[in-house]
Image (cartoon, rainbow, N blue to C red; front, side, top):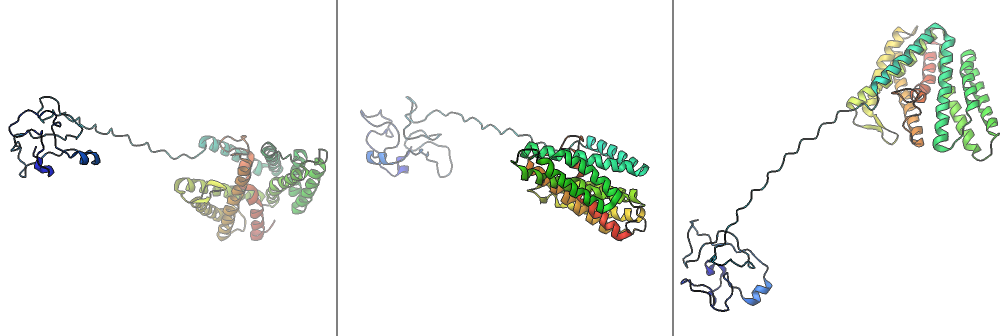
Length: 376
């Protein structure tokens, strides 16, 4: 190695061109360092001299050319004469290609087979009772109301410790539906008032602790489930009552179907993430579109004296109220910390999970049909 490459003259004890043995007490072979400088300098690899023209030749002093880096604290082995043996570098292992993650298939989030089967079965029962004997369909409404009240009061007690009295609610709810069918809106309001009074009195048989929250929940349940369902029975009293009820049911189902289908396929923008994370603006657009088209067809071909433009208004109103009803029950379920109100209907949840969009839609459809074609 050429010492001139480091900018220092040859030191005593360094092997010269004559390749004489090392002088007694001399430093080991390698570049000479000043002792003071050596203590203050970081270890640095020695870079071998490379001829200007890139030739592979020995140094003019006779020292063998280094073929690899040599650190200051390395000691050459005996007989190496400054030419340490090379250790072949092991090739870097090539990275193992990782398989691409499998693309997850978008899930509908529920058992579609069970949901469709239950839906078809319920539809058959409703249509059969609707067009055979009106009174039978009134009984179907009353049964649905009682089961819905049982689910709602049970969840309130389980999750919140609220004991809304079920017995007066069930009796008063069934009476409310029948009164609406027999006596119209006046009978429904009277039955609602009597049911609320019965809830207040019934709860007095228990200790006063929690009385206010229990009776408040009871009055809310009486209004939310049986009173709103009474408007379906009131629709049935018209001459074309079965077709009015069928229009109401079809448009609500079509709205829910449009929201579900479009939202599942194209939904990206959340509608109300704090209430119902699964609902999207695209789904709402699908609900409005499907319901308006269905409303135009139903008003034109099912409702006597109805016109298609009235159906557009009716369909828009149904989509709005059905969505609000669904969000309203989602708010209740989120407050209770549950996913479904019950497990009675496979693929759907409970009865209340099917009534959520129907209940607030019933009074709106009843009112619009009365305005458009009258109450007869």
